[in-house]
Length: 144
Image (cartoon, rainbow, N blue to C red; front, side, top):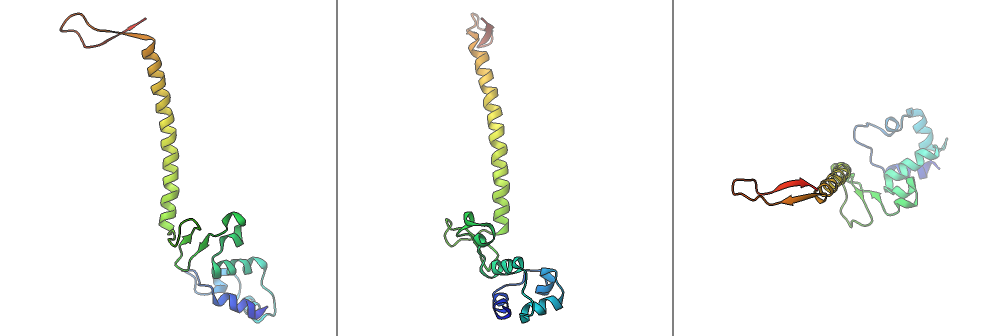
C-alpha cells in the first residue's frame, strides 16, 4: 500500500498556500510518514481526495451525474459538453451570478406582465372618446 500511496501523491499538485501535504491534510508528519511507508494505511477519504487531486475526476467524488467532468492541472473545470475549454473560477462565479440575475429578471418580468395585464383589463372596461373641439386633449378615457 505504501508504494501505491507514494505513486498517487507523485501525481498530485499541492494546492496554493500549503507548504506540505501533511499541512494540507491536517495530519502530523509522523502520520504522513507512516502512510508513505505503508506502516499504516491512510483513511479512504484521504485516498479519495488524493485520487481526485491526481486525476481530477468529479464522478469519483460525487457520483455518475458528474461523469466526464474533471479538474485540469491548470485549476479549471472541464465539462464533457464543452470540448477542450475549461472554466476558470472567475467564469464559474460569473455563471452563478448570471443565473441569479436571470432569476431576478424573470421575477421582475412576471410582475410587469401582471401589471400590463391589469392595465389592459382596465382599458377594456373604459371607452376611448375623441374630443369634439380643437383645444381638448387628443384622447380621453370615460368609464362605461
